Amino acid sequence: MGVLDGKVVLVTGGGNGIGRECALLAARQGAAVVVNDLGGSVSGGDEGSAGPAETVAREIRDAGGKAISNSDSVTDYAAVEGMREQALKAFGGLHAVINPAGILRDGMFHKMSWEDWKAVIDVHLHGAFNVTRATVELFREQQSGSYVLFTSTSGLIGNIGQANYAAAKLGVMGLSRIIAMEGAAKNVRSNIIAPFAWTRMIATIPVKDEASAKRVERMRNSMRADQVAQLAVALCADGAKETNGQIFAVRGNEVFLFNQPRPVRGLARLEGWSPETILEHALPAMKGNYTDLGATASVFNWDTV
Image (cartoon, rainbow, N blue to C red):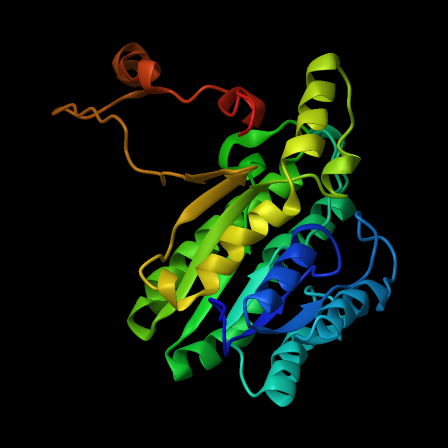
């Protein structure tokens, strides 16, 4: 018996890294799995291959599970509709979507090209829209469905050189929140995970100093994709039906729940504000509550468990 017995799950980016581990674990937990992966490079600059998705699907079938493969791009809405129909035709339903598909095209913002901006937004943010919009009516009609979308501390906290990725991943946070709010009455849930894990995407991050070298080595040794998959699969289960609209992070054997933006300080002036009084009064009073400009490593500054 598994926590996903009788479920059908679509996993995007399922040929490698976190997606692969999610697909394998979902199958071990009883789900029939549609393994989607374009089979392209980390930068998304090539045509891709059907090989990675089919390799994972075959591994599931060889272990006695149910799986089929799909090598279309999440950036193509019609293709994502095809993934939904593929699940319905092959397995008679669809109950959850796990969406870690992604690319990276890092660079300082003042040097970032339009092409690199658009490519990352298309995969991460437009891709998240496509997989949710193409399936949400089905989930609402059957009054059951779970989305596990992927954000990043690059958006939630910030990392230099990832403006495109951060913008997309913070957009996913807003998208998930609204899907959760609108879907709650129909038992449609959406949660997001910010993963810490050594994947081929992480392997592309340049190592420029000793501190970053140590950080990358720590990720390689103690933060695995299969650890992230445990939470992703759990969030698809009926046992998580009261968990909706939340933001999680997984870092090795640690699971974190993030807060969500709320006011932290307020000031009122009966006669109203002017630029001068804001500069003289409001901003100095609020300065102690400002959030610093530290990157992810300054927030998660201890060794993983």
